[in-house]
Image 1 (cartoon, rainbow over the protein chains, first blue to last red):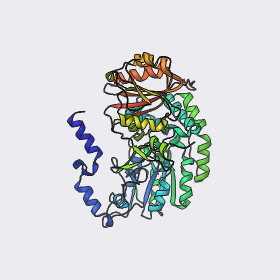
Image 2: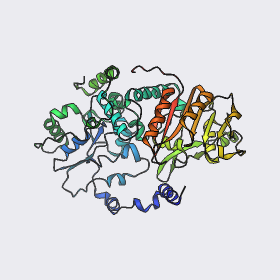
Image 3: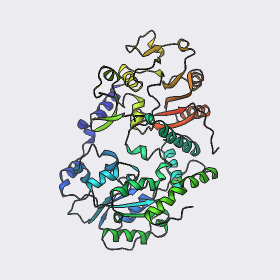
Image 4: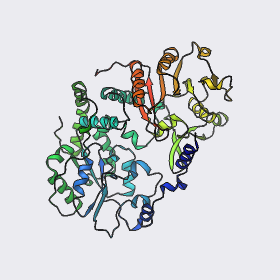
Length: 292
Length: 200
């Protein structure tokens, strides 16, 4: 390893003295954390379900500060909870003297992390929790294409799904093979199938929070009824309703597909696979989405 | 069975992998001690940090490791197999070198282990062609064994060719991009078990 590589490794291993991590902005934010909001709402689910469109709508309201394209969520509760303090988390949000009345973040990944609801309950017991669910069949394919685009995945969609099923079977039959890693990527990047088991994931949340703290929508209904849905959220937040401007769907992975369209055989498999899980979800949230 | 407690070392503001020291466990029945498993220095540890879901190494595993591995990392692997199996390191540059660890033996010629079967073959050497790797797998990988391989992504075409050739004879279990720790590298776990596809 050359000098450059050694220096890089040293700085990566010794973050506390790494000058590249220093920032006036984050230092200022940290020093002023006590006058900053903690979030009033969290968009907990799900990834590849139109999160950036939701943020575009939320940010049209002048009293709301939600995340934005490059910083949708802090990922505190599924990433750095054991390492960073609540003061650190608070430093990411606006001050109480800003124009904002309602602040939130939208990681869209908390839903699938088993530790997230317990951690959030401790820090934000009265927070409002929002889900945007997407038809899990399309969500799985969108997540796969996302992984292909980023060079994380080189298998076909069918083989990637089979590999995930094989991992699920191996973990079921050989618990000594399981790596006890709560790192969020385990629940996101490599779970095309499991990420869509919304009902199973939601059960953990229903154990911790009251039903009245949740709102559940589908990505598909957002496209059609954005005004109605977003204003129902504004009412939920206790702020006035506004007329929203339609935004073009953000970050639509399907437009950048590198692989061929999903084969009919696997679509049928996924529809059958998700059917009982979707029905369970609809019973839990007392609402039905038109997912075919 | 007990779940692996691999991710449990908090250091430098981050949780990183550690293994439970087998040599300490042998000497004492008290609570185990941990051995740090540095992800910037070992590709499997890097893969764990990057989202690897399963680790096919346990007490009954014997490993054929192809590539360079230092003593400290050998101990991490021995922790996982609890020093129960004889393992081999195939590294041509380490001719006639004796490992200080009894259960890791260096070899510079695969003839020395002819007839042996391994439950894990770990390939961490860019200089060996995929054709040679496939020949090694044919000869030395147990029928229910696993291949753990680190492939360079410096050339996307070469990576794709290698991935495709290996996928023809083995079944992908998980592909992990480890470039946060090893520039332009991916680690892939393949299973030798034949799986009949429902979709193709």
